[in-house]
Image 1: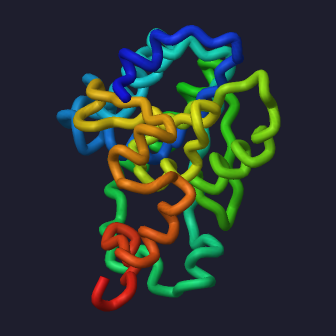
Image 2 (image 1 turned 180 degrees about the vertical axis):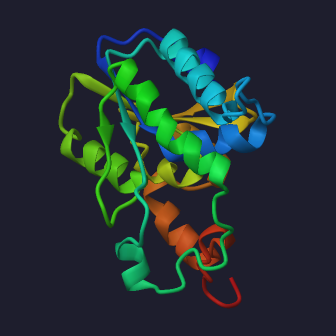
Amino acid sequence: VSNDNMASKKTSKKKLVLLDAHAIIHRAYHALPDFATSQGVPTGALYGLTTMLIKIIEELNPEYIVACFDLPGPTYRHVAYENYKAGRKMADDNLKLQLESAKDIFVDWGIPIYSLGGFEADDMLGTIVYELRNDKDLQIIIASGDMDTMQLVRDKEVLVYTLRKGIKDTILYDEEGVVRRFGFPPKLLPDFKGLRGDPSDNIIGVKGI
């Protein structure tokens, strides 16, 4: 379902947008040129993030926005599987600098930031969705460049607003949209990933699948 079609539908529910800040900034960093200030401070990812924020506010008109961040260091996933994300290229210094500077943008815009040592931004998103799952007056929209968040989609109550390419081509998924894309409902995505594997996270998957 395209964002144009779904975003235009009126709803009496208040909207909460959960930003997977790390995923959005990473996507912007790799999609945009190496912008910089006259002093040489990198700004490309920050420009992309700000562009995305403005687009979200204009299209979705949410009452609430929250940003979720990863923190440096291992997570409980590394404890469960020591090779988790092994071999993944380390973020370069320009990206690290902008990940930190992005927090200033959220503070200036009055957007709360959630993070916790030993956990990823995905865990923050999932926890917030779980805690608010019974609030019938709230529609939750997860904004991310990470397809893993689609496992959280539920009917039209929890949606995923994600990037198809660049930072301006977006799509809004409800449960029907996830089924059209994958052929099965969101709750089966963890099983699918476990069986198929995921090279980006160094998850091997089941041999022969």
